[in-house]
Amino acid sequence: MRTALKPTSPAEAREAILDTAGPVAIVGAGTAADWAGRLGPVASELHTTGLRGVITHNPGDMTVSVRAGTPLRELQSELAEHGQHVSFDAARVGEGATVGGLVATADAGPSALVHGSLRDLVIGTTTLLSDGSMVRSGGHVIKNVAGFDVSKLVHGSYGTLGVLCEVVLRLHPIPAAVGTVVVECPLAEAARLAGTLFESQLEPTAVEWLSSGRLLVRIDSTDEALPTRLDRLTALVGGTVADADPWAEHAELTRGRSGEAVLRIGVRPSLLPGLLDRLPVGTVTAGLGTGVATVSVPVGSVGEAHEAVHAVGGTSVLRTRPVSGLDAPAWGPPPSAVAVLRAVTQQFDPDRRLGPGRFDPWEI
Image (tube, rainbow, N blue to C red; front, side, top):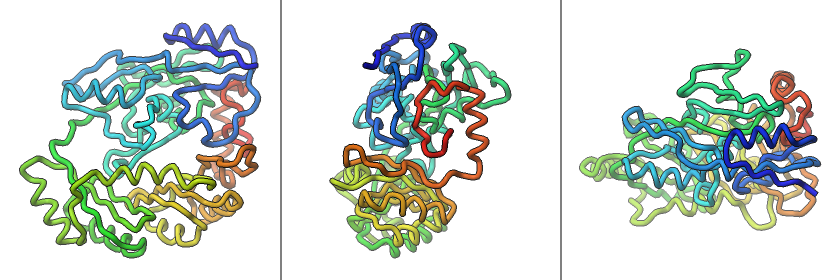
């Protein structure tokens, strides 16, 4: 039986790690519990949701320091009172995903086209290592440990390098007005229109194609300028201005289709349409400017999909196992940098106490 550790401060988290023997699972809100490699046997679960709340918000500097177990939607609500937000819109935010969990899983949403992933928005972290060391990197305390930029390393680490306790984030003003143009078209036409759009000066904040046959193009602007910009957009790519929020469909499609596995893939944007044509996909959300897509595939085709993505120099990770005990690879073939990843893990967690199995079969 696993021991549940529920610290409410970084100091308590450190004591819990030091007082516990054996492997430990890092648990947040649970919105990505099935992502990546299946968790191996662990003696304890360290729950981060007690590490909650804003530490320091500097509206003038447009930064916020927050405990990693804070749900991002709660943070957004508090920041909105100052006209600011974290420019991040992954679907899991609405499900209560925590700041630390979103960083650890390298999740992102459509606005990554302009603002990047959390890797680009995180400017500092406080991370607890398995030996009890508390590492501060970037942000308010500029200090790298052993030459590593820990704030970047923990992004996409799935809880294997350390326990995120605090995160410092860069903020942006909430746009005064937002509009979306919807174009009904197949993927090939959407890719052509996206190319035209990116050559223009319209500067969309999101360009996503959905497997329902819809291209969504979002524009952030001022109240005064938005109508003119939307007119220019429809003149360029066609379609109509949405009179209701069309992005709920995007969020729903990231969950995939019942009975199918869900993969997150990333390739060079120009290669994404061709790759999607070759994959046995069901549902699709495709970032035509980012090269990132979330797709559902039959459970028996997960390995084939990984291989196809790897063949064009991309990356892929399993996000949903619809069948209990599904023996499907969580990752594609190991990257050329796998030896570096192993060396980093050896430096931070030599006994492999944290999140065992998350990067299987790479043996990290």
